[in-house]
Image (cartoon, rainbow, N blue to C red):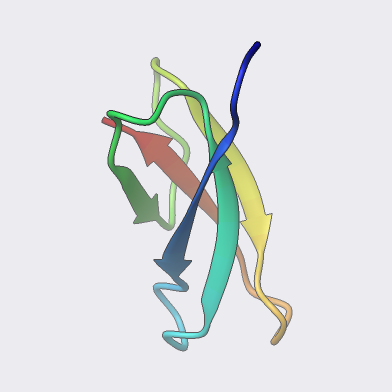
Length: 57
């Protein structure tokens, strides 16, 4: 059975918090305004319409 972990991240533009699913429970989500060249990441849009990337370190 796989359990999905949910973490809160802050938008780098307005500090609005959003929930993201993390691939494993031991990773730390890092919000960024730009996409990374490699690694696991996801695209997020906050409730104010700002789009940013969350990388999992």
